[in-house]
Length: 271
Image 1 (cartoon, rainbow, N blue to C red):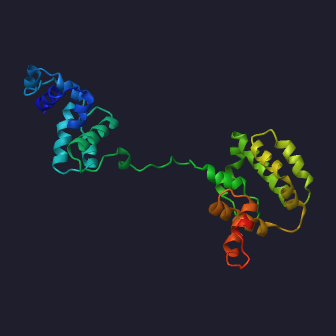
Image 2 (cartoon, rainbow, N blue to C red):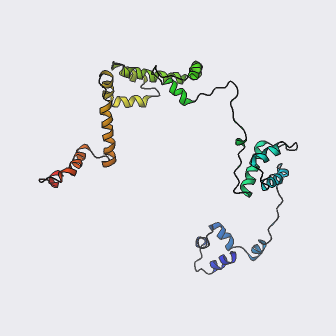
Image 3 (cartoon, rainbow, N blue to C red):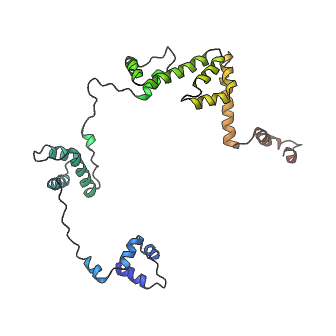
């Protein structure tokens, strides 16, 4: 192949390394190396140098790992067998690494080894794990009929003392929930003034931009959930079908589907 590449190079009027690489399907640096190799360099490829193998503390165990894999022993069997040998003084991590690499390089169909699967991970006695999601659910539950986690309830005092942010989040949420479920809309202004420069500033700014519906929801006894739900559904459909078309153009487009059937229909008048 090297001689073919050199002949191809010499046969070109304007030789280019990139063109040679594309013709033979090799990388440009490899093509450049092959093009300028001497006959002596080519002959030396038939006699590769035997480099001295690097000494490693695991050298004594590599052949054992390989032969046990060849005999069909599982990764776990090899791992625990070598660990129990009195002569083995290396770390468990290094042993697991070599089992993984020897299996990967010599037995492609073999399942890769992971030492974590050889043991069961359990919590120490007396340790209780409370996830952030469960904690958030606990502090944001306002309905007294809803049963809350008893384990979190046992430790909530200690958690709040260690993490003051939790109590702050609970206070912010429950204050807003209380004023929203109440009937005094002036409390909303007090809330926005109190927390307008806090961590929930974007939330407060969002309410200020459309504060009238929120105040109406607080002061009025009638719920507008049904109306708002249908409005939102209509807006979603409008965006899907007509994009960001204004309501005037939307009206014309909707009417166009039916007006064409009328006798006095005029497209020019519609436009």
